[in-house]
Picture 1 (tube, rainbow, N blue to C red):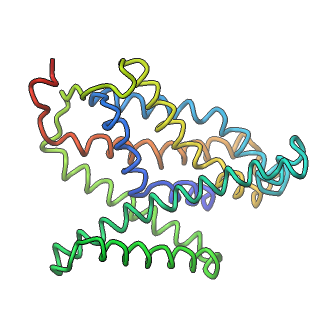
Picture 2 (spheres, rainbow, N blue to C red; picture 1 turned 180 degrees about the vertical axis):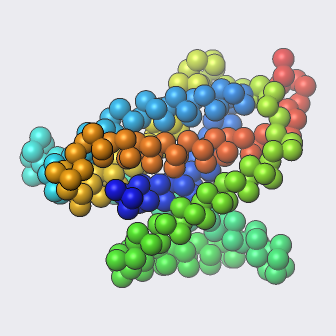
Length: 255
């Protein structure tokens, strides 16, 4: 159970989740509207995640294979394609956010270049490392995820400390992406909150297949999995939505 919690938490408590939290800001939502939309969306996303968490321990196989009982052998491609797309998106966000941080940090500490060439080289190296770890270092995945979880928590706390002094909690946002507050807020709820949780849909089921349903029935398994998802997504995404609000909004946008 502790390993399951570590895998679910470490997979999402990253700079990629922080970057994902920028979306409500780009939608034009205010400080509090961004935070509430992310939190409400995360809680709503837990509902469809419940069966995906327990299906692995019941069937002893992954979600895509289990879906064959409902959609047939060919229908399993639906789950496989969705899972592959979500993993590629998550990997791309992780490499993009981490690469930018590495280039910026190296430039400040070592005075290295920050142009497109440096970014391209960093993205390439990170991509190759991701492939090597996935193919040859699978047995180290739990240890690697634990390190990522610790690094993610520390980084998020440092971001909170860095932004705490000059975050404008009275920020009222800008022009709504969908023209009205309600529509834009709902867009953030489903695109950011629910969408963030759905990135865990394949990971959770794939790992519960290794957990005995006799020793750990759903009544014990679900609280751990759901808590891990909430803790790994809601805090970093909320920090991401707060970070860009350091500057005071122009007066013409406050009316």
